[in-house]
Structure formats: structure tokens, C-alpha cells
Image 1 (tube, rainbow, N blue to C red):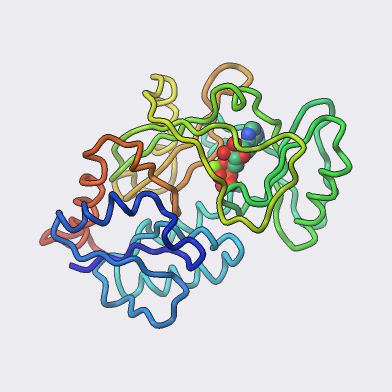
Image 2 (cartoon, helix red, strand yellow):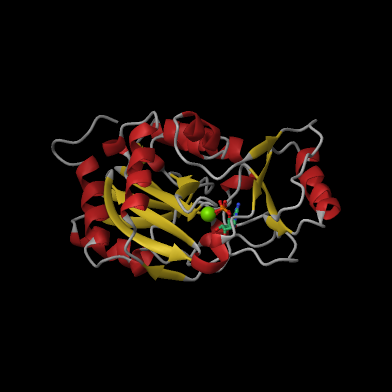
Length: 295
Ligand SMILES: Nc1ncnc2c1ncn2[C@@H]1O[C@H](COP(=O)(O)OP(=O)(O)O)[C@@H](O)[C@H]1O
Ligand SMILES: [Mg+2]
């Protein structure tokens, strides 16, 4: 069976998971290829399964990407499923998570036309709701309202929805914890050090930030929140080929969701237990196996 691992031209060769997933897929009996989503020469119907992996440039062209996702799924099996990708590719989904009663980093959303209202007296973060790899994301000190307002306005003027969050102080000390799920089941967890440097302006040119990652054992509270997130969302958990829940410790010392990644998360396979890549590969192969799931 043929499996497409989908990347972006600018991301080719930079996905650290590939060195683990490609051999695991071959060992599971598949014939994998890394392909670029907007390469018009690709015959998607020739693949049994198409797996989104490092399509990190979709945030600049979300509509075009979602159109491609739907068209591709119509001729093969694309994972995660198009409905999942549509919902999860705009961080306004955090509002849904909060609505389900889940702990989420406090977030204000600004739409084009809104006047940017910014927090007073606390450090805060401004970022677009469609983003990945820390692009267009910056942290501001309490006195930096003017620069922050310019940043927000620039995004709003380009028609983008903006989110404003208090800077979660614990990130400086302990980073964030990413819990990775494969086929809906917990696999492993990794901590990621703080990425936003005070005084550093938001970047647009880099496709992703360089991340410092370490394997970690999540706390029972972190496991519980991540499980609650996957049980609450309006998609069957066992149909999620992969999922990553990024948690930080909130001001109350309890885990809060910073991000739920269902589109193209790094799965941190270099930091994962050795069996993780095999689990993922076999789940992919099973999608097209003899008792395969419906498209
Ligand atoms: N509210 C926040 N408090 C502290 N750090 C933040 C906050 N929001 C973002 N960051 C930092 O910026 C990085 C990127 O933001 P994130 O929300 O994860 O978006 P993405 O990974 O999609 O670019 C995070 O990994 C974290 O280091
Ligand atoms: Mg992130």
C-alpha cells in the first residue's frame, strides 16, 4: 500500500519525525513517500492513505489548504479527517473547549473591525488564530501596549483574527507539556522550553521556531485534562490518527490547554519511546487494511 506523508516545499527535510516514521512504515509493509500538498503533479488517488505531517505553510493560505484537503479526501483517505482539520486549523476552537468546561489559557479574540483592547499591568501575548511555529507571535511587557497594538492592528488589517492571552509565567520555568496520542491512545509526552523572548518582535519569515524538547512523564492532572479534551471534542477519539495536547500550568497551578493540535503537529518521535513510530505506522496501514475503515 502507498502512503503519502504530506509536507510543504519550505519544510522538506525539516520534519524530525520522518526519520522514524518512514522506516516504521516500510517495516509495517507500506510504501511511503514524502510529497508536497500544493504540488500539482501529485496523483493523490494513487495513495491508499494521505497523512498530513509538515504542511506548516497552510497558515498563510488556509482556504486554499482546506479546499485541497476536501478534494484529496474525495479520492483517497486523508488523515486527520477534513472536518477535524477545518475545526482545528483556527484557534477559535479554544472557545469551544472552554465552552465544554475544559481549562483553557484565558483568551480574548479580536476580529477585523474590533478595537484592540489589551490587558493592563500584566505581560501578555498577541498572536493570530491561524498560526503555527510561533509565527507572528510575540510577548509584551505591561508597558508595551503601543507596540502590541500595532502588531494586533497589522494582523487585523490583513483580515486575520487575533488572540490575546496573559503571558503564562510558568512557561519560563517549566515550559509546556505536549501529550501525544496515536489512534486516540496516549503514547508519550515531551516538554518544550519557552519560545517567546521578551522584547523580541514577532517574526513572519521563519516557518517554525527551533524547539528544545525533552521526554517527560506527565502528571496525573495533565493526563486527565488531555483525556478530557479528546473526549469532549465533536470527533470520535479513536478516529484521530494523531493528536497532541499542549498544556501549561496556569496561575492556579493547574494544567490549562494552550493548544490542541490535530492538523500537522510534530509528534516528537525522536523523544518518544522506540515503539511509538511502529504504533503510528501500523495504525496508518490498518486504515487501508482488509477490515479497513470507511473512507
Ligand atoms: N499565553 C502564553 N503564555 C506563555 N507562552 C506563550 C503563550 N502563548 C504562546 N506562548 C509561547 O509561544 C509559543 C507558540 O505559541 P502557540 O500558542 O503554541 O502557537 P503555535 O505553536 O501554533 O505557533 C508557545 O510554544 C509558547 O512558548
Ligand atoms: Mg504551539
